[in-house]
Image (cartoon, rainbow, N blue to C red; front, side, top):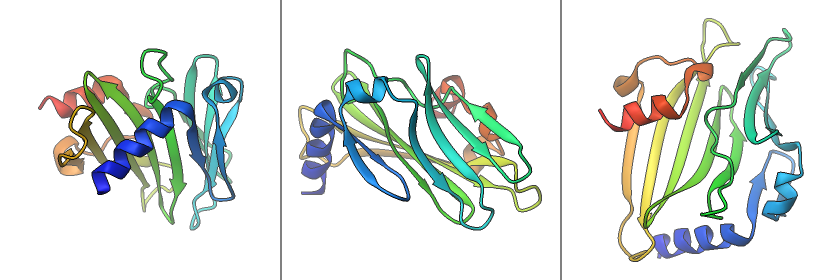
Length: 177
């Protein structure tokens, strides 16, 4: 049942993308997202840092800003929407006390791939964020009733990697180890 719901969610994403932030939930069509600048914002509860997902040109950028006015930007994590696979793209941003989560959907052949990134800030320097967890859930579109293949990677697998150094090449290296 859970996998059927996952497939239904992926199929719904073809017509709409769900953007969730700490204040509201909005369903927006792909065309509206392509014309929008700010997609999602949340605030880390303990440090009062703001995390934004913004569309700049063809890229989706994640920025973290704090009271010290330090701004960290990464435009290499989120895959922009693909016309060949309308289900692909940014899905969700959520903030916790000291961490934030980014979820996006990818397509790979017959697979829907859900990517989850968890970034945590350092206890020593709260303006530094590190990749804490990377997870991929792959569901075969031809057999959605089957259990998804889940790959989970932590700092034990990839070491301490700064937020700004995480990109598609890095993720490829982690997966192919």
